[in-house]
Length: 149
Image (cartoon, rainbow, N blue to C red; front, side, top):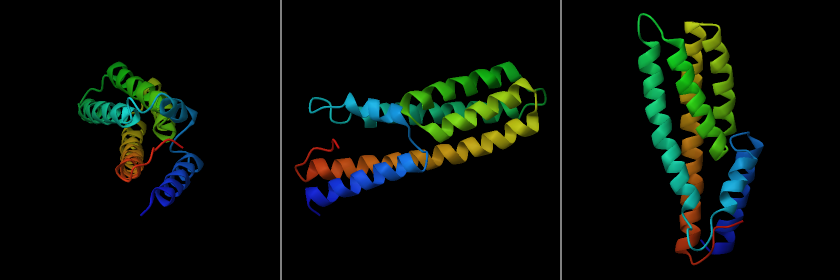
């Protein structure tokens, strides 16, 4: 596939991610920090987000599985995930975190567990979408183009 077609695919896919609420303006701002000197900047930031998120999701599952739930600790993890999802522009993950924190404040274990499942789902979706986006960018680079839109 030629660079022009790949770029069209990238633009359409990016618009879809924004349209479906996966990403917000913060993602655009991250992309503006990427240049020829650091063409993988956004992918590198996303990789850190993925690693951090998986660790936090595991911590949340462990904390919510205990007989006596420490809601302050759970809330601190959710707050951390909310911040990192916000910094990368993962809007749907961030929204679930806001709801999750409300359940923490109410000390509602069942609500927290439901939010954890929703959070895992939204995280898996945004991760697969971003990986597909970065794959398209790599194809454009390999074809001799620049992935910037």
